[in-house]
Each structure stands twice: as C-alpha cells, then as structure tokens.
Length: 151
Image (cartoon, rainbow, N blue to C red; front, side, top):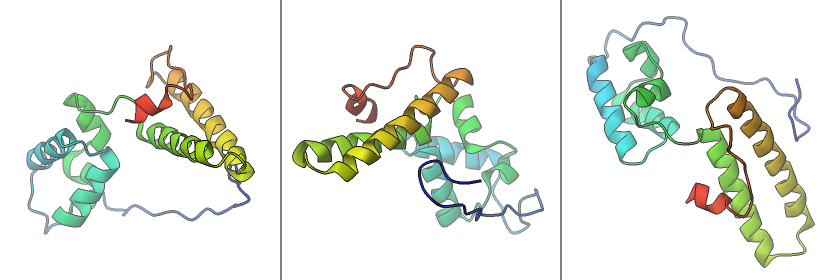
C-alpha cells in the first residue's frame, strides 16, 4: 500500500520477538517498571520517549512483556496519559512550525503546499480519534489556536 502524501510504497518495519516472556537476565519487577514509568511521565516525557528511555538506559526491550500492559495503558490507569494522542500532537507541532516559517517567508510556495498536506492529515486523524473516543467530540483543529495546544 502506498503512502498518503508521498510516492513511497515501502513496507519496511521492525519485528517484535516471537517470545512474549521477558528475557531471563532481566531482574526488574512489573511494579518497579510501572513506578519508573510514572516518574518519567511526571517529568513530562511522552510514552514513546519513556519507551526509548527504558530500552536504552534500563535494558527493558518491551514493557508489555514485563508488565503485561502497554505504556499508554499503564499511564492511563495512573491518570498520566497525555490530553491529545502523541501522533496528533506532533502533527500539530509541525503545522505550527510551518506556519511560523510562512510568516517570515511569504513566497515559499512549497511550504504552503506542505502545510495543506499536514493540515489535511491532522483533520483526518482528528476525525478518527473522535470516532474512537480518544478525543472529545467537540475537538476542532484551528490554525489560530493550534499554538496553544502545542505549548
């Protein structure tokens, strides 16, 4: 299947290990991992940043194999989940930065074009998240108020 706004048709992706149990050399309990994740979330880290931190610094390749739950589900259970989903947040952040660039460089038609593409992806993703009830039904992306969502 092709990409939405590019020419690529790649299917390259990472593969999870077949074994769903944590490795034998990993000596941390599920409670320790959960506590550490909550501490990192309180510092302001996103779920993907928490996963990278646990993988690189603590040797926990898959949080799900240790705890039985995914990072976002654990954060939701502790009331630390982000307000808007992470992928939507980063798209809004990208749109805000493109808009800021266009204020300085009015003639950059390529940036104008890509802003339209990014904002159409934002609208599509917001529609999906409203249907799956991850966003409130009255959520509406507006370019004027987008910088407050990101800040």
